[in-house]
Image (cartoon, rainbow, N blue to C red; front, side, top):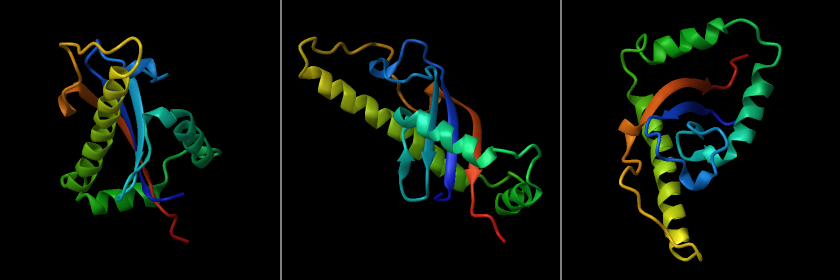
Length: 137
């Protein structure tokens, strides 16, 4: 599995469920690597399967993992790397929303632009994140 991070986000804008395609609404799962959005919120089943596969039989925190995280982030004081990935995740949700709105312009039903559209990072709360790293053997 490629190194990256899985974000669990909650949409704080109760009026928005993009095209009713998010089965976990108001929650969003997004798997982001340093270079790309590996799986968008539309792939939440795949993301959940990945989480299940790498956490199977793991009942305690992995000491080496959280020690490496603490060292990399200066005990959580320098989260800029992860903040950039969080922005990528949220932007992927917003881009998908824009694409869906454009597609709906050409549908028989047309589109309705709502006053309470998703505006950006302030519409989401970070619930949890899972960092995926290669295991050092």
